[in-house]
Amino acid sequence: MSETKDLPYTVQSIVEKKIWVPGKLFSVKTTRDPDFNFKPGQYARLGLGLGLDEDEAMPPASDLTWRAFSMVNQPDDEHLEFFATLVPDGLFSPSLYELEVGDSIYIDKTTFGFLTIEQFPQGGTLWLISTGTGLSAFLPMLNDEKTWQLFDNVILCHGTRLIEEFAYTDLIDGVKERYGKRFVYLPISTRETHKDYPQKRFTDLIVSGELAELAGHPMDPEVGRFMLCGNPGMTTEARKLLGELGFKSGRRGNLGNLAVEKYW
Image (cartoon, rainbow, N blue to C red; front, side, top):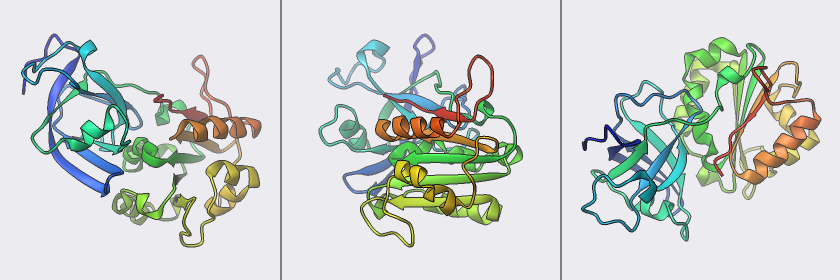
């Protein structure tokens, strides 16, 4: 691996690539710098040298193209893993999608984000509401023992358009087996019938009260702690709706019961 001591990034290699939905959803696993540390829920910036000379192994960070991705893996795992959506006419994702095992990728040395369980008071029910690849931020929390020490129950809500877009279900099934009734998983597809779940957006389910019914837990600010991660439309609207129910973000050192991640 190249020496990047004086640079704000490290050069890592792709060690595994998985296609979840051809031409749409994929994940990459990379090598990891020993000094790269993060908390579940935080994200990294991945960089690609789009349009740069291939012989320039360590270009200035300002010459690279960067995008934010949450870590899927546990903080103590050997490798880093990232879950992504291919945007055919996008600037970044098509090139990321084309990477193969052995190819290089730049990873910022700094981790970002405050979507961590430390933002909430202890106890109650942790609601993790995600759409699309926003699921990534929550996966490391599910197998983090601290999550289950801090909260009585965990509800993972994952919204997609199609059933085939539900990813990491083996990992999620393992969490269910381990924690039983303390864990609720709600996979909601808006365009296809999936089991007995309604074909509705999470925001509609919040307004109607159906989300609480499906989860079997009240949406009560006294005991609920909400995290939102996904497309900006969902997070903005859901934040407003939850605010109307009495949920608030933490401010100036005071713990809240609502946290939202913004990549955009």
